[in-house]
Length: 498
Image (cartoon, rainbow, N blue to C red):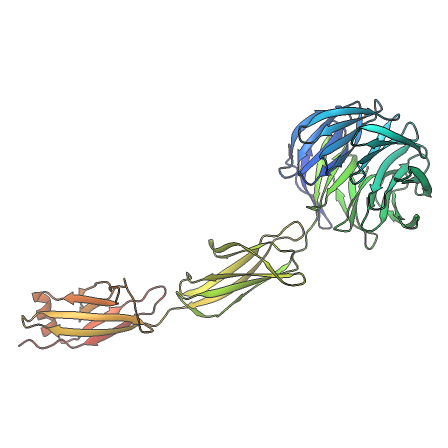
């Protein structure tokens, strides 16, 4: 379950969750297509299955003795687990969560990597000094390749058809041509190389040198070590987020070093749990998952996302009440997404899709005629995505009340009955359903509502007629106005009674 430990932040990277798993978690792999992470628990001989969306353990799978590493083939939704205690690999069907086969490999299998394009898995056999090559389709070991002393980690570059194997006791990396199965070169790195990861897009391999506290950067094209980066004490696992040009390195001292691949600098050191070992990255959310062996937990590290700028403009400001006004929100940089326009807690337009207007810039519009008169704060909120954080922009829109006109007519019938009539308009158009009051002096005579033609009529009673006749004031028609319309009034003298 997700723990309640407070989040820690370093260099813009935050531990956003701590998930309890089995005893002695070591390896971790993610399948971003199904939002699932797999963690090997050495002490329990199990694999914990984590739902990355809810960050909870949804299942536990029994495997072989002392499971070390795990790799996932997202193309076929299959996980491969090395069992260091009995020289086997457990194959897990991700859909059912069942172990579908157990494959015998070399002694002390440790690291494992999958080449999805070639349907091949590579297993580093630490006790045998070899790499077992597994045909994923048949589940058979098709070849065994001799490498250096105590091979530990393995990573593949499917684009280059190359596998990289760290030799823990040899301080070297063996480079295997996947097509021929031959070791084409042996590269000297730092002391005690353990974890290895490949950035296929950058043609670069990263090797964690546990005995040296460094990471060796290998140019895949030349096979040369182009840089040595100092990290924390006892670096073990390493993973790469190619899209973000970032490498994550676990340090047994209880931290994760975050490396900017472009500059080769450590940009953040993130405190995690006790004895962090394995690390894997979900490239779709730029989230790292770190196994803490002595804490029996997994730390979830979320990268700080850049915050785009959101600006809001109006088609006309001020604008008359009851008439259309269009708001435009511009967001950049962004990769698309949606905008919600609102006034306070009232949504005007929900989740409007952004449209690209130029490189990295998008906009969305919202047209409304529901705003009441006054100064109204308009908010536009960009929802964010896997690459960019949420952003908001505001605009103060002035809504003016529309002018009105009121005309009055007083008619005296042959029966000496006074009928009051008034017509309420705005820009020449009648206004219906509005209250208009007739009064004489301080006395209100009646308050009818306008018809569909904007007309109100009031027939005075006998006492009212006498009052209107003897009152020295005129008869006034008054419209009090509304949230959208200005008040107006007019007055006329009552006709004399015969």
